[in-house]
Image 1 (cartoon, rainbow, N blue to C red):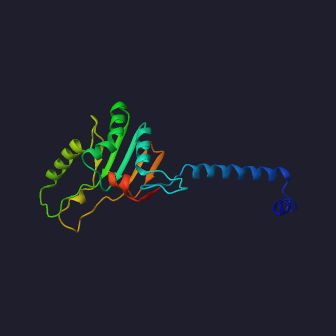
Image 2 (image 1 turned 90 degrees about the horizontal axis):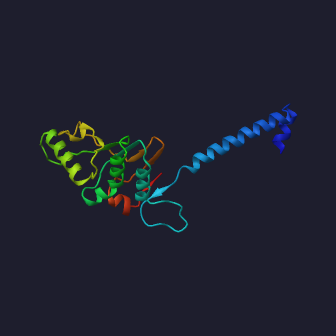
Length: 191
């Protein structure tokens, strides 16, 4: 109340004060809407009083809402039944929606001591991806950093980022890899 009286004393009219208060209220409502869209996600047993959600559930929900694009980045992904279960919903959605573009940025590694040509390692990765990871008829675009297959340590690099971006509107940034252990058992926190 003191501030309103002070504004009046320095020459602000009631209309100007009301206008300024309306602008402030609108700005606060906008900030609150943004805050309401952010939620904490973690993996592991729930904690009493927690309003957090499980990573695996959130990832499946993100995949199930995708309309036109999904970007996935991960250091590690499962193979076999666990991987197929994780990506099945997205693969089915991609097959049903020809406009849905899925891009995956993955860390393709050279096994320790392996000296095979990069083409052999990439062919093996592609065959494993198709057989043990992706169940859909349409394949996602898969990218990797070629430095991850370098033989020397001077040029070696790895992709460590983990995130999901859906329709350029919803984002999950996480420390959890795309593995069953990370999504179902680890105590990782993401937002």
